[in-house]
Length: 125
View (spheres, rainbow, N blue to C red):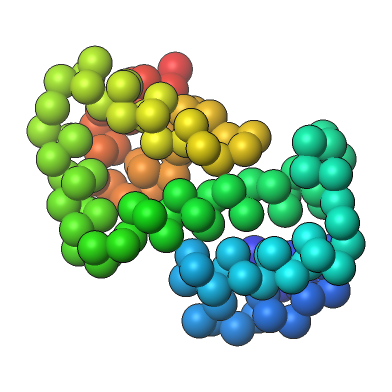
């Protein structure tokens, strides 16, 4: 559903290509949109804001996944076995370099993993 929405919003067929959702490829797609459209990335308007999130978020996720998906899941599993304060610190640190994203949204993202669901649910209240 998200690929179709972004395709319609930005008139960019690359969103419909499954392989383009890998962080490095997504960054390239979004960077090309930014070069073409020259959005003000500090704007709170929807289109520039989403471009800003996808540009910065794809960089962060590319870094998180540099050692592979299994390594990232291992990191999340290790966090899940720490104290609530350590998990909170992780949730504060994770989105630091993702524009317009905070700890609550990252908590929802991670809860979707079911790995830190038990702790992350309490931290977003």
